[in-house]
Length: 237
Length: 237
Image (cartoon, rainbow over all chains, first blue to last red; front, top):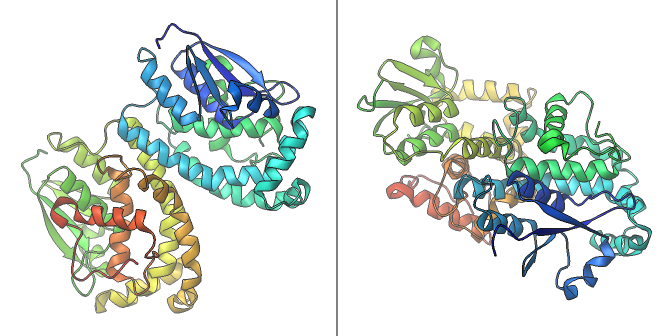
């Protein structure tokens, strides 16, 4: 495989057409960071088993020449290896290892809380033909509780979400990006979660006084010609 | 200042003479990583105001020629700058930024829980002349609650501590150190907290089945000729 082959990115879209998956957004940022042109292929939840002979269970999926692969970290590593002429995603193995640690923390402490806040909003925003599948698969993860019951008291969980973001806030109070002066893959991981939230949130996650985070979100959404900006987004504070 | 000047490290010791501060341990690891010889100057809590004309409130403190400074991150950055011939602590600014983020997470989610478990154990292990100061200053941080009351139900907090370590466990299940194949400053930050715990813990923090973490602790305590090994340590599981 070489750098001149086109990359196709299969991404989940909501009823309004917006790409919402936080894992797809990571790959969008990785491709753009490395200046790799790509073609977007919009699909819905229930299309995943219909493509690539059902080989993949989740998005993102990329297709590049004869290579097709899923899993955002595998894709990031593939892009880094296969497109050496683009801006590197990682300065070396130590930064790579640290971003993987950041991801493990962020998924466990932050994304889990965002799921609790927004899973019903995703259901409402999904394409009509995806709704039944989405409800069934997500309710299976929460021991069969209905999405409505699971999210009924969601506003009570906002303080814990905001507190879990303290490590980001601490760093972003003294530097523009988590990566330092310029964004790195840790920024993309966190920005992608907020891209997801901003696609569906009927309850804003952040307090309007949370300036370190809100200013970083502004900077992050403005990156690469405002790739993260979309009139369909909902307010995050 | 140059590399040939000797470095003196002021470190807090317990009644049994063991250096216990997690922040001092970070600097011990940083000095050793960079192969910088140093002279240890053991002091107690109540000695800090008596040295350097009371300029510093906390350890670690290092003295190098005419430079004296506190704060473990400032010291790490100083050592990196001043001893360029030693093995670098950081591969570059992105790794540095990521380790700072890891530290913000680790302090908020892990060290805070260790404090709740072990603050009374530190009191009991402190030098007799430091005990009154230690009690007064720590009880002030917990709204005047006695250390005994604060820690009475500590065993109930073990599950939350162990869960907070999930990100470390996830990474250490697939690689030997947080830094990857070799330890980096994130390993030293986490190992230092466990050095502190192992200096005083009358209740082990970890479950004996927690092999990913326990094997990493073994590897970490064995580093640099077993610098982290000491017959005065208490079991961590």
